[in-house]
Structure formats: C-alpha cells, structure tokens
Length: 221
Image 1 (cartoon, rainbow, N blue to C red):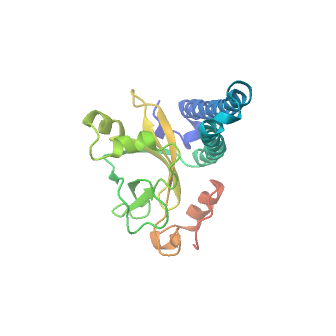
Image 2 (image 1 turned 90 degrees about the horizontal axis):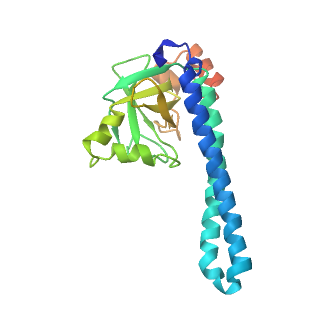
Image 3 (image 1 turned 180 degrees about the horizontal axis):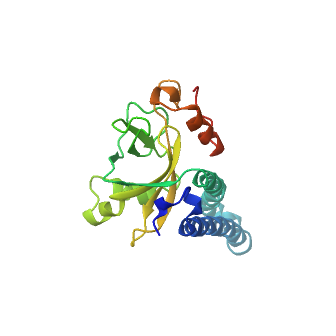
C-alpha cells in the first residue's frame, strides 16, 4: 500500500496508526515527567529533608520544564494531523539537507531540507526545523560525520505539505511502506520576517486556500 497513492496522507491507514502511536508516546512522556516531578518532591519532603533542597531542586525545575515542553509537542501533533488531512505524501530521494545555518533563512533553524517548488520544479526551496523539540533523531542522521547506515535511513523521506508554506516530514520504516518520525518543516525564507510573498514562488489562490485549510496563514498572495 503506497502512501502516495492516497488523495491525502491521512487517508493512508498506516499513517494514521503511526501518528496515533507517536501521540500516545508523547502523552506517556508528559505523564512520566509529571510523575517524576511529584516523586522528587516527595523524596525531598519525606525522606531527605530541606537540607538537600540544593541537590533536588534543579531536578525539580528540569522535570517541570520537560513536562511544560511536552504540552507544546502534543499540540504540534494535532497541528500535524491537520496538515496530513489536506496534503498527500510525496516521496523524495537523495534530498539535500544540512545542519548549517542558512543566510537565506530568517529566524531560528535547527537543520534544513530542500524540496522542489511545485510551480517551478527546477527551483529548490529550503524548509527548516523551526524548533529543537524532538529533532535529535533527525540531526544525528543529518550530521556530516554520521555513519553511512544512519544516513541511509534518510536517503528517502516523505513530505506532506507545500514547500512554499509548511510540511510534515517523515522517514520510512524499515519496509519503506510506513512513514514515521513525523516532524514539522517550516518555510522561513525571505526578508520580511519569515514567509516571503507566496506569489514570488508561483502560488495560486487555490494553493493559498489549501494552505489555510491546513491551518497555515500564508503571507501576502
């Protein structure tokens, strides 16, 4: 069952299952960090006493931070679902990527991939990880020093989205039939603080409307 054979990525049953599994893992991580915070607090109050606060408090702060961060990760999962419900999967092989900072990208960036402009396939547009949340798996494989067997795991990638706006990136499972490791890629090229005028990239009114259905508010058409 080829994921690209469906009108949208969400209509591919293995994609829905993979997304659901990722969401469950994110929720479990949230619960685990909350449980750890309470456990540390109990250890400090009941077993160790106030004299050990200087040792335990940093771990309390870190576990609270991770639990708070996990809320954004869960929110991003539902935003990804909206993109998956609008755009189909597209398989790309031997995509250019890197961890270097690109001068043509505005704002924070934690690695980039290049995909062809749907209106002008000869033009490659960079899309970036705009957040550091959960991109460690990807960055380890994108590193120039990564072992060849790790790089091979991202020699083919799936993208659901529009490189002029936003997309959900995924790596194939070992059998190559199930996208996994969903992460957002953002378009942040331009001098206006992010999205350049989409008309510069040949986006039509239909493209913009499709982006809005996916929860994206493109820059001026």
